Image 1 (spheres, rainbow, N blue to C red):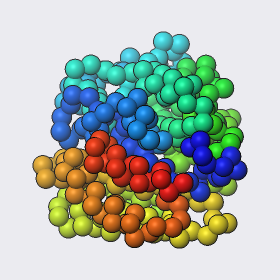
Image 2: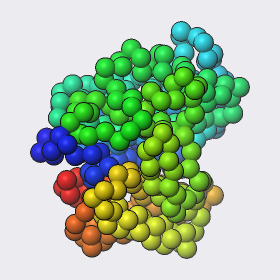
Image 3: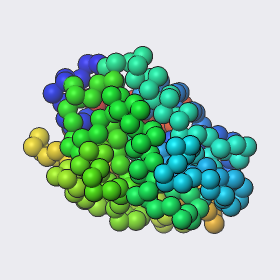
Length: 303
């Protein structure tokens, strides 16, 4: 990002990201979405991280015992994909991942990283709002100078060496306008939705229920359509385009995350080659390594 003008809006950039960025450890094939850890992803151009977190638990086959209270000073959040820990062997802490982000930004002051955080995991007596207060008090506030927490789309010059919070959860009213770019919800399994919060507009493609070959072909079309929307947006359009290339279906082994990632990769590259002008927004990938790093490089080379 060092060569990009400081006055460039984030929504006018082409940004590679990863889906379930922390699901890179030894786990079930239906849970794992990445091959490389966060540090490696960042070093290879990824600038949007999709982090799913939950109170700590014993996560074997999705069964959980929570030890978190919303007002506890000892709360620890762990990383999950749906109801499962990202690792079969142990809980991976949110702190460990955020530390990698902070270290990267300290060493690469020209860069910024969008950090999307949402709460998942087995059913809990703790609400999203309660957990949002825990996250703010125990994780964000101690490192607040490293975070961009405004609700508006920033210019790059304002967020170099900072983590930009992309908030996928609700929170208390007193934090609503100072707790990051808000995207608490969008239509599930959406081919295309536009949401607006606090004056910021976000266009999302997140068609994720890939049950069969028909759905797989639909997914390819939806990815390409979102790329075309982003690349043809007018100069005055500040919409942030979010384009998930991920998808899966637990009950069909041919539609588990890695199979879907391999199937949609050619469609992504075709769309990039067909839209040689214009920005791309955020394109979010599964199993970013080797082949997919080629896609990541093709995305950020458009800046």
